[in-house]
Structures are given as structure tokens and as C-alpha cells.
Length: 210
Image (cartoon, rainbow, N blue to C red; front, side):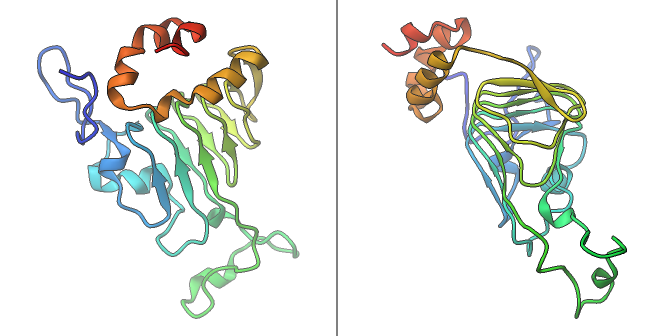
């Protein structure tokens, strides 16, 4: 029996057979026109399944111009959320008060900058981390618990703090280049499961020969 079920809404089954319902496969829980979500990415929260998108990205309405893009195999802990571009207020004048949002005929600020927010493949976001508008987090990165990520994060970096800063890189530049070329997250599921011992041990050389 495979370890992963891409069709499961709740991917975790506890040792006693209980389905852990706080964790959801985002691709199964979310149907949102401004979100693109890869397979096997999960998010843990205490709301209903129907509230998942709203909890994850509370300012990303269906009519927003920006997108939230989440890669495959992302691991998003409880309390994390994305503040997307539509949360911005106008800052070019004297006041930042968003007067125009209170009437439907003037709603929105079309001149505000809009950038997509991107979470790469195999990114681990620790408990209570926040990602600010337009940030891109590279594949394989780790975001420490409670961090506020206001700048782009390179692949396989570990960042933490408020604002989040680089703590260290997980691998050498050469190893990172090899991992990005291998792109294991795009392999068929049976190949990924065969490669699991190498994925867990960090044996990049062996991974390249699976």
C-alpha cells in the first residue's frame, strides 16, 4: 500500500486508525480561482474544510488580481497565513485610510502594485509563520516558527525571525544545483517512494541513480 494517497482530503491517519481531520490536502480542500496548489501540499488548521482558503489567505478574494501559488509537497503548519497584495493600503498620499473600499462603485485601488506570492515545492513553514505580499520562497526552504517573511527566500535556505533573515543554507551551492535539476517532486509517486531512503538520508548521489 502506498504511503501517500493523492486523493485523500485528510492525508494523516493516526496509529489507532483515527483520521486526523485538522490537516487537509490543499489541492482537495481548496477551489479558489486565484490559488494554484500542487499535489500533496498540506495545511493544518482548526476551521472547517470550507474555510481553508479563507484561513490560509484571508485577503485573497475571488476578484483579486494577484495569485497565491503553492508548489507540491509543501508543509504548512497551524497558524500560518499569507498576506497577499490586495491587503495593501494606498501609501502615496497623506493618509493610508482606504476610503474607496466602503462603496461598491469605488471599491479597490487599481493603481496599487500587485505581485503574486509563490511558495515553492517541498517548503516547510513552521507554526505561525506569515508570508507578506509578493514574496517568493524557493524550493526546499524552511521558514522558522513565528517568522514574518518580507523578502524572497532562496531555494534550500533556512530563515527565521521578524523580519525573517537567513540562518543558514541546507546544502552547498553545488548540491542545491543538483537537487533543483533532479526536481524529485516531479517524479512519479512510485519512484518517489522507492527513493524515500535517499530523500530521508540526504544522499544526493544515490538519489540521482534511482
